[in-house]
Amino acid sequence: MKNSYTAPWRKLALTALLGLGGAAAAQAQLNFPLGNAANTAGTYTDLGTTGTVITTPNNDDANSAVTPIGFTFSFNGASFTDFVLNTNGYLKLGTTAPGAPYFYSGPQAVTGGPLNTAAETNLILPFNLDLEGTTTTEYRVLTTGATGERVTTIQWKNVSDKLVSAATGKQFASISFQVKLYETSNRVEFVYGTATAGPGPDAFKSAAIGLKGSGNTASSSLLVTKGSVQTWNLASFVAGNYTGNAHNVRSSALPDAGRTYSFTPQQANDAAVSTIYTLGKLPVPFNGAHTVRALVRNVGSTNMTNIAVTLNVSGSTTFSDGKIVATLGVGDSTFVTFNAYTPTTVGTNTVRVAVGTDNNTVNNAKTVTQLTTADAITYVDAETSPSNFIYGGTVASILANRHSLAQSRTVTNVKVNITNDPTRNTGRSVYGVVLDAQGNIIGRSADRVLTAADNGTQVTFPITTPPTIPAGKFFIGIGLVVPTGAPAYYPLEAQQERPTRPDTAFFAFPVVGGVSGGIDNSVNYDDRFRIEATLGTPLGTSAALSKAVSMFPNPSTGVVTLDVRGANAKNNLQVSVMNMLGQTVHTASLKDNFENQLNLSGLANGVYLLKVQTGSDFTTRQLTIAK
Image (cartoon, rainbow, N blue to C red; front, side, top):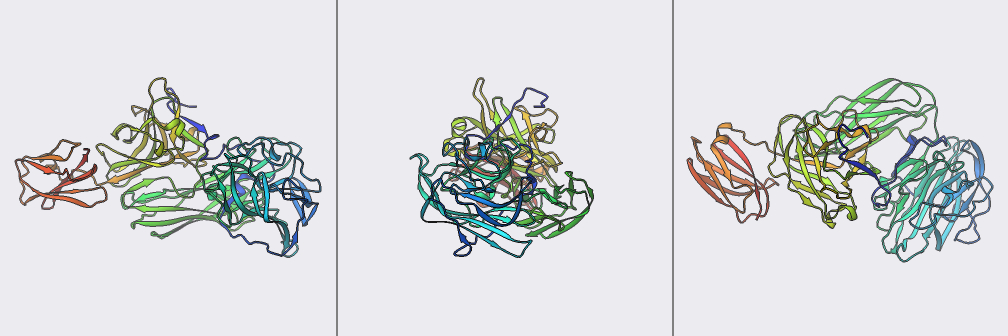
């Protein structure tokens, strides 16, 4: 780890935690590039009575007879015209039936099974789990389309996971899914139908989903991974065998009907939109002009020229722009920077980046949702998969995001997504923190002892004295409180950002701040921290009035003194008290050269904004009530 001081922070691969997936390895060598795999919403169409029923001796640990594909299908450097279906949610290309073991060695294990058996080759695994039949289970195959464009659909209908132990129960009373094999393009799709939850108890099980070629090396598989509590749209792809979570499932996180995982072999001309770099929440108008960037890769087998890349923003903001990538070699990538746009309306934007038509349209576009807000800023969006890693360590430190504003604001709250790791987190202390552009601490919340209920949630840290941020860069973060000798804990969640954005945004600091702006997290890890800031009104608009007003005590138990000296008010002095929703909850008149007492004991604990005004001049103060 490249640090200029004793490492204050670490990442932890998520192996035991149920919320996130396993770590990635190098690109698979199946002629199915990792960048060509896609997780999309679609439509599930049951085969009904069309096609041919695939018969098996029974619905538990059985293989079908050799079944024709209907055309020649290329996979793993070979050509196949047949397959054998296994009732445990996978098929083997060719005329040789799969051999035992047909599934993992246990319901929560990633050992054993066809993925870990070197002799088992040329496997397509849409839902490899210890499955059994129901009263309506059926296996069926249908080939459709004209020669050269045929599609063969293989369907497992109304199957269920087997009850192995009381602890893991039955997660699916019924689930249906399909494999689609495409002629000529040799694309593979897994499509999932409506599932019905089993009787439980709600617990995770490890399923193997993906493709396996030959042998049992780290580059022989292209798999799908997710944590059991994640929805299926957040599943991501990993090249090589699982090193952490498999495709973990549970009854409380069933697939949405039509969820599709697709795998496309390398094509001659194939540009892919890999990553969009924007903000998940953007404050208007304080953010100013916003620039979207995207990473475009050449995942094809030939050099490409004059690639058209377009940006379209729709929703509360409408904007479009286009750029041309002059040349892009095989395997190369480039950052595309679009012209800036300035959102002015609170609402929801859809940000879409696309390349022109090529031999593979599955990876030509990517879309993220952007919320334009009155007071929030974060990099986190709703579409990006959680990281394979969580962040923390054994040394007191600060993990922070760097942001930039076009106008001065205050930071009133820092919000952090806490990992679902009660064993390590519960009883440990953290805090929210604000740092200036140089990494100096300028605002901080009180320490918070994490409770069991905090795990797996977004926690809000009110900043005790919200600092005023001038226009420009600043940091928001989470501080780790680590007593001497305390064990490691990893409270901070992250999202994948691969690679991280070219304008560095994610940092680590020693607990005292500083160190020339922090240590760049992207040096080692491709992740964005799940941290958000709530912004407020800048304080002290009138310098003269601000100098004339003193407020104490702060925090207060309810009775507050406003000492006004030398305001020289030409109009009546008024004070208004607003909560963080902007609602006025108290008003009063003030006297100059007088200690004015406000009785706010009827207000709930929390942070309030006091505004003292005379005519068009005003000054504001942040007040915390803590009774």
